[in-house]
Image 1 (cartoon, rainbow over the protein chains, first blue to last red):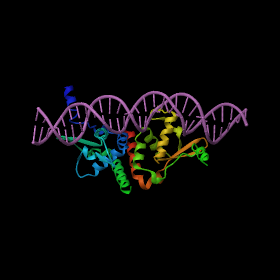
Image 2 (cartoon, rainbow over the protein chains, first blue to last red; image 1 turned 180 degrees about the vertical axis):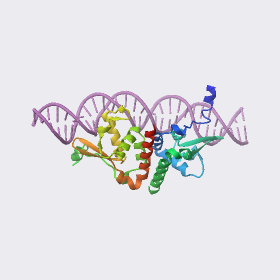
Image 3 (cartoon, rainbow over the protein chains, first blue to last red; image 1 turned 135 degrees about the vertical axis):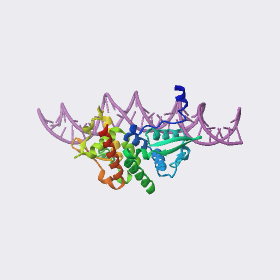
Image 4 (spheres, rainbow over the protein chains, first blue to last red; image 1 turned 60 degrees about the vertical axis):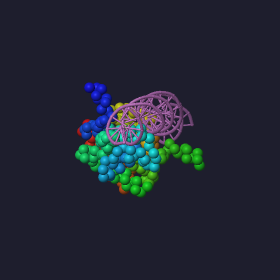
Length: 120
Length: 120
DNA sequence: TTCATTAGTTCCATAATTCCGTACTAGTGA
DNA sequence: TCACTAGTACGGAATTATGGAACTAATGAA
């Protein structure tokens, strides 16, 4: 049973319950330029995206392991959902679930960030 | 002239121009529980407060040097203004200056944080 | 003056995080 | 079975945070 749990670590990554999500956790996740860029991109995108979409981000190439870490932090903060589809991990925001408690805050952050990026 | 500048380092701490302030900087400043607590407290307070007001915060006693660093980060992110008044440093938010570019975001963050603290 | 006191800052050694190269696992398709 | 692709785990290097001790700057009393 425990070996089974270990086997599944790479299959279904852990997502916190909505009640476990905190403002501090969200703000820490957003405190990195790469992560807020990823989230803003996912939030304004038409469809979910895999991790490798972001290997090129903010004018530099990120190592896979670094990118993996950024996705883990966004996931553990409760901001995104990652689902395995074949060999890929498909990422989307959890905006609907977060709407009640964090909706206005997250929307304001993303809007302000996107507006800033346009002017720079 | 340069020695004069050095002399004044401990008198008037540096505050960035509004144009220099960034979303990432603000979110990094807010990513620490102590700092968001300080800012929320200043934002909802009737009057400006000195640093030592916060030596006791979040159920623990902070060393002066740590507190000093937290204020510096809030200041350098452009979130607060610190003005010397005698032996004290009087801190207040820069909400009015920030209103145009960051008002809605900061308000949403503080509101969400304050609401969370009430329920916990 | 000089001394004591208070409020913050700076310095620096240690602790904790983050970053990233390498080796790995898991799924797919030939 | 093998090669390939997508992503994770591990561990050391680089960076950042923490906090004690020594410091500066203002004030007020003797």
